[in-house]
Image 1 (cartoon, each protein chain N blue to C red):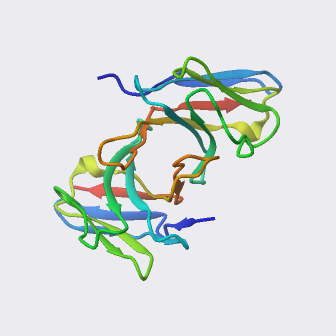
Image 2 (cartoon, one colour):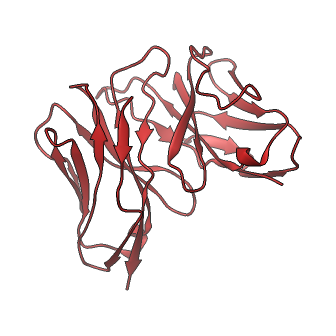
Length: 118
Length: 116
């Protein structure tokens, strides 16, 4: 089974600064997707960014970018110019090939709580 | 369009009672997933529906848990004889075969279940 590890239970960043959240995963598959989800206090899981494993180029979405190191099985999220609204739980998730029993079920890390200070 | 909705938003129940949690997926989404988020834990996959069919129910935590989906749309997760360890946020997600092939899952706001 694939495992996803987020080693930082909590992180703090000052407004306008940059922060990097870490994620490592374990898999024997070569084709998969990785995701970062944001979960604010409202509980609504919001997709922040996705990365396809066969694409070498790191994904970017405005202030959010990833550092995808396939050989090292590392997938970190960088948030630039942090804003107060970025404060939330951030989950790293892995999605492998389709499984007849579980479809495209996501494997999640335990999350990193990001605090943004003024 | 409308996103995934779940009801109730919050549910407090006494130990031993049955509860039913509802998920309305995005219209046209054929795949539906249930996850459980317990305090201090990540999100745990419970069950997957393709249409009305759930191929594998082994992810459900115990035989007190059951789930069904009707008409390829609404799904209900039922917990019988609730226990305190069932207290968690139950999240539902739906997805379709998107053009980009990422089959992105769209999540509902979850139901927070508290068993007293």
